[in-house]
Amino acid sequence: MARLIRIFDTTLRDGEQSPGASMNIEEKVLVAKQLARLNVDIIEAGFAFSSPGDFEAITRIGQEVEGPVICSLARAKPEDIDRAWEALKGAPKRRIHTFLSTSDIHLKHQFRMTRDEARIRAVEMVQHARSYVDDVEFSPMDATRSDLSYLCEVVEAVIEAGAGTVNIPDTVGYTTPQEFGNIIRTLRERVRNCDKAIISVHCHNDLGLAVGNSMAAIYAGAGQVECTINGIGERAGNASLEEIAMGLRTRKDFYDADTQILTEEISKSSRLVSKITGMVVQPNKAIVGANAFAHTSGIHQDGLLKEKNTYEIMQPESIGLTHSRLVMGKLSGRHAFREELQKLGYTLSDQEVNEAFDRFKRLADQKKELFEEDLEAIVSEAAIRVPERYVLKGLSVKSGVGQEPTATVELEVEGAIVQKSGTGDGPVDAVYRVIAGLTQTKSQLKAYIVKAITGGTDAQGEVSVRVEENGEMVTGHGSNTDIIVASAYAYLNALNKLTSLMERHARAEQKVPLC
Image 1: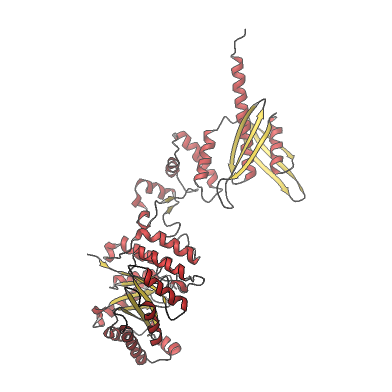
Image 2: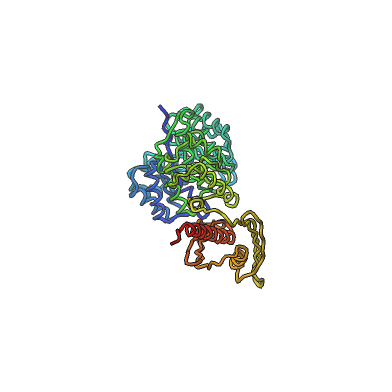
């Protein structure tokens, strides 16, 4: 049976130490309730002594949030521990987490203490916390830069004093997975009473190794991980809760360990914390980034459509998403293109797919990503395509402040290339005047409508026009990331329809019998 790893969430304490990520009391309570739905084991709700706001937040969370153990951080000082107890005493399940450095760097320069003084203080403060609660955690801060023998000595002493959890923090993100795993194994081997406490780890991400170090510690025997939603926290952040939980769930075969996290709540938790803190999750962030379940390569898309586990080691549903996303762009293949069209309700023949796919590829060279609206525009244009008597081969426009709009248009008209330049009241008017001259149309433009199909500066624009001649009214459509080009396509589409319609009328009249 897999070992159960406790998840100690410190989003509301260490996570809030991210610059600009502070939360008010109501926001903290809201996040704590979501953490309870996520089924974390312990919520470090704040640092009671640090501010009245943190004190109130811890108090309210302890009273209003059911399920997890509620914890307050406290320095190894009597007044901090007393304040933590005051905030926690209304919580059904409570923990005091006290800490003191063990590295010579911190003891000499920050605390001005000897090793013996630090060990004695740690023991006394654990005992003081135990006078209030049965559940006490102690952290030897900057443990990974501490002398290993001295670290073992302090850990043994605080367990003897009553600490049920001893957390080994990589406070400055200094260690490596191999080194950290060795530290945890050494503690478990050399600390005689290690079996009486849970060994926890708290890793920072200064070198990008927070999750790797945490996983190495679990493999070496750690039973608790301290982490945050989206990996937020001091400086470069903390180990990411979602990466720890899904790493263990996905590779249970390797770690022989798992958590009680309800992973289907991960996506919702990530979005909530991102919204409240204003810290946007990077698109390529593991598990919860926008690209985590997005596939761009045509080879990957083809494999995924045939069998999901070819390119997905996790199911998007496992973190609360509804499906993977095929990113439609220049790297996409016909298989994915056809699949996306079918999702939109379009069933096309092979020839129609090929024609639409060619236009898709041309458009994809202009846009980074194509969306449903783009695909619908491509298909609708294919559906209303008529024989093209007039084909746009080239277009250039000059326009600006103090400059008369000028357009040069090159068309293929029944196999012959024709070109003309002209001016107009604006760039579109100039293009339309030149096209009218080249095609010698007698029609009148009755309507010109522009709309953006998708958002962003690279949005594809769609132009619709209505053209009338001899009582016949037709509508033309065109789309392109260049609105002038889209306008030319729409006008020519309407003229081709009009020409086709008038030719059908002429053929019909020739078949009318004489009286």
